Length: 107
Image 1 (cartoon, helix red, strand yellow):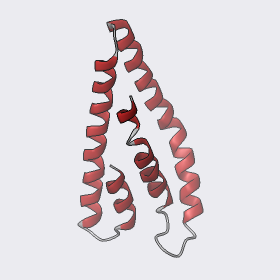
Image 2 (cartoon, helix red, strand yellow):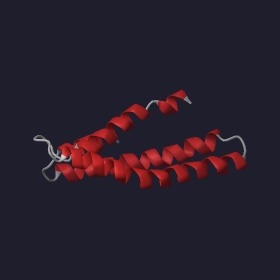
Image 3 (cartoon, helix red, strand yellow):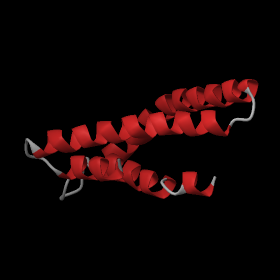
Image 4 (cartoon, helix red, strand yellow):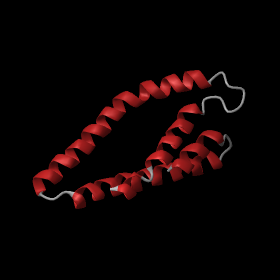
C-alpha cells in the first residue's frame, strides 16, 4: 500500500503511474478487508462486534471529511517544489501507512 502511494506520486509517465495506482488500490482492498476481519474475529460477542465494526465505519467517514483538508494543504505547500511538485500528500500518506503497518502485530 505504501509502495503504491509513494511510487504513484513519483512516477509521471504511463504506464508506470497507472500500474502504481492499481497497486495502491489493491493494497487498499486488502487492508480494508483484513481490518474488518481482524475486528470481527477479535470481538468477543456479537454486540461487541457490531459496535467495533460501526466504529470502523465511523472512523472512515470522519477520515473522508478530514483528509481532503489536510491533503489540499499539503498539495498547496508542495506545488512550489522544484522536484516532484504535488507529491507531498501522497508521500505523507505512504509514511503514515508504513508507520501503521506494525500495529496489528501488537494486538
